[in-house]
Every structure is written in structure tokens, then in C-alpha cells.
Image (cartoon, rainbow, N blue to C red; front, top):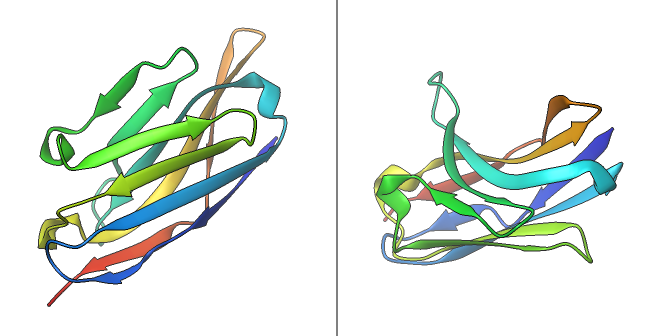
Length: 119
């Protein structure tokens, strides 16, 4: 089992910046990828950015050039630096970890943190 706790959401004006952090604990030795998803209202949760254990990074097209994901494996942390925020970046951001053990993938989720971009 992996437990995830997110930090750093809040209210920000368009053009502003926020940094999200996520701390993983528990069976972290099986973590393969760490990432962030966003959910708006009742819509499906969508990938924002993810980084795997060998440094491969994937960004959703709308955030490329504005968001930066990073991870610190020594601290079992993943971060999302969000710059030049737009109204459409508003949503609940969930930290995600994917583990691989005995050929089985498992997803773990944080509790979510609200990001609101508003003037």
C-alpha cells in the first residue's frame, strides 16, 4: 500500500503560479511513475503530467511550456510547478502513483487539492 498526501493548492489570479507537492509513504519501493491528474466537476479525471522512474516525462498538451513536474526519490516526493495559470487550469488536482509488483500494476491516489484560477 502507498499513501499519498498533497499540499499547495489554493486560489490564484490568471498568470500567477502555484506549486503542488505530494508525499508518498508506505510501500514506496515499488513505485514506477508519479504524476498529477485534474478533475473538473463530474468529468473524467485527466492526466496533467507524469514522470517515471527513469526520468521519462509526459505532459498534457494544454500545460506544455507552463507546468513542470519533478520528483525526489530520496524523499518520495513529486512536485508540479504551475506557471502562467489560466482559468481552465481550475480543478481538483490528484496525485497519482503507479506501482509494479509481481507483474501487477496498481494505482494509488491522493485526496485531491483544489486549484482555483480566478480574478
